[in-house]
Length: 355
Image (cartoon, rainbow, N blue to C red; front, side, top):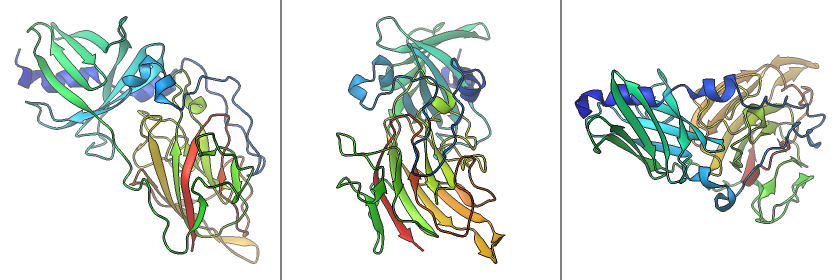
């Protein structure tokens, strides 16, 4: 069995549609998204509280293996990307992308994958299956993914190294004229603003100032919540004018719906799911143009352009209505609200430029 000839069908079997696994039949039914009575108010917590980790050192053995792997193995005709999602209790799901990771070569034409399990020694995540009468084994070490044809001995068919992607706008400096809403030096720009012991802005903060048209930069960190599913998994949101929510959620490896990271909630799904693994710092860069009114009647819808981790995910989208639970559309400006959905999401380097 030639390793070159069989590399692509092998990968096609080891990596499958993870959205079906993570969202179609979750192990625990996701809690309904609670209404936001007012931007300054914290939303009700989900019905069930799941363990949430903000530090890799305390996240448990599964954390080491979840993440992104990418490269072009010897003999492969194209590069491949794989996202490994931790599901708790040593269970994992892999999602594969021919061409490369989302935002880095993936053609959007196909996703593939397979389930896997942490071995008893907790040294690797493994799986095996039979393809055309050949036994195939997969091993994830945390540093790389190795694919073996167990009928031909110990030489791997291919290897994908682990990658740690960072947003192109991470650490972006506020331009002249920007209002720095949070830089770690206090929460004076927010009502209900709280800082964590590590000097990060916590969820549930609303700006005192209100804004019309603006450009907003926000950096956020999702907690590691492997046993949670759907809307219960690291949920928050960036509410523009307190009305229109850009969803914040651990949707790493999912298909990218309007209620997932990068989506305008119940309005527009992202062009590509650019969600990075939990505990990686991520960015939103939002260009917001407020709805226009004449004599109290709306004459033009709100428009939003969103870049998630530096990649365009919402392209001048017309938003026809406020997010369910957000404040009502009016001609008046509104605040920026970083939603409290009961999960410990963290924020930093938040600045805004009024236009």
